[in-house]
Length: 378
View (cartoon, rainbow, N blue to C red):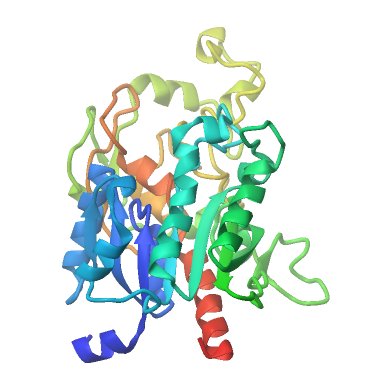
């Protein structure tokens, strides 16, 4: 794209960029991302590789966001306060996750939430977009009040002159083959007439309702046409993007344990199998050794357990995770593909995907924001 055309597009700054899932969607909606701020070294490698594919790629700031001065960043971008159209990001969610310890503001990662306010106060963007886990809505503040964290966040935006509204959105409702629930918050200066986008998809039994919607996209549809018939097998942690992230690192023992699990079920439900296969599992372990169903959307991709292929006795590869999340096939992840019996520093490729916002959902949100700005003359 010629530089003069790119400069005419709406501008954006990305915080907590991760592997760039949200950035992909925002860029597809028509925004020119000027900078991405991310601390994880593997994610930064992914972002730099993606930026290298663009003629005027974004500035990648590989640093702890608490050490980045917003006004210094603006100066590096040759911008002034008020000139950025969109500030967006998805702060770390572990402090608010319903499956975690839910320490909220007692966890320093929970406090990172308010970095969005700090940057908004300095940059004065027209719109702020933030993504978080649903647990944010019930998270307790320092006084122990349930829902106190979201109340404080809204109050902080109000303090700097922004009106914020939020909604819980399911990724499958917007064409992503995944039942992922997340909170999206949109804040605008002075007043807020933004309306969240209406769903475009629904469960099959609801798709023929009064207002017809497309049926949910499925895992089978996402995995169709993967290119190589089989992923490259590896018995160790792989530190590269070889085979375009389509690498299988399933240990032999895990192949044995998933073998008796039917499509769409999980190992702990197979009470008839040998006790040695069930060892360490309880009936509550519904996401461990889970084999996905080709005819349904996936469960929410997570950073802990990696889900299994619907028909093959192996974990899904990072590339298959990317398909289910809605990443373009041209996008490459950098960093290690962790063996399930090993460990790595920072985020491996499966975690990079699971931590990110599905690009198609980000595109829908950013397009709605762009339409709102145009309609309001912002």
